[in-house]
Image (cartoon, rainbow, N blue to C red; front, side, top):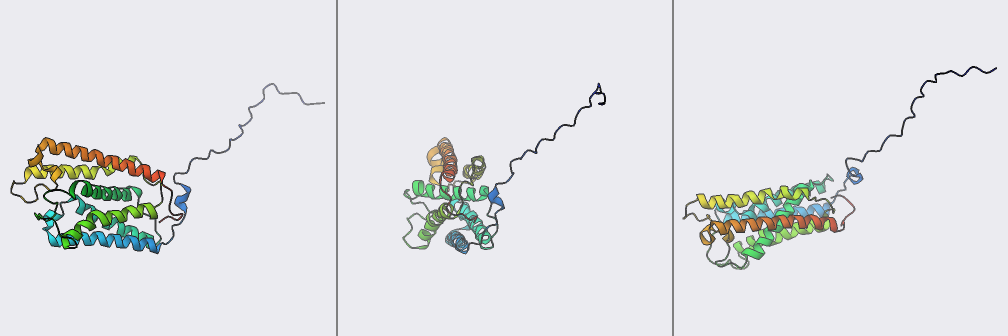
Length: 252
């Protein structure tokens, strides 16, 4: 004889669902230990030495207050520090510097080179950080310093990015942050020109920001166009970083 079927059947416990696999907060490549890269470290060390040597040579040729006011000199000081730290990390098999830092250094190096080659290399009177009225002679101190600051060091930084740095590390959200320093520098240049007396030798550091020659409206227009060009360059670098192949399998 079977037992009577109860009128109220208790609820059965729910069958637990399999746990959801959440996306990892860091990519899988981030947990791979970096390898020691002596060649990369040596190249970056030489780049840092070249940048620091160019700044030191320019300081010997001109007054420190004037020389240190130039965007190209400030950029090379930053490049010397960034490349020195990157060389140390590559030598000791440490994680590379954040892409936001190396990307900013790359952008400022490219801007320094482009501005000099397109806007300053063929001006009349010739561009000089020491206030000289004549063009620097080839292979003399001022000419060597200008070539190191605006050509050799930026080219080395660009090669480091193309050959020794993994691709797809830069992001578009970083471009606006990188633009802050150039905008502050442009504002500093325009305000300095308005505050300094007319007899000050370093009142107008760059001819395209010369308010006496172009008026403040023209200088502001040049500054705006230059700021837009810098932002466009940053976007282009980010796009190229995601389009180019990764040159190395190892993180350096």
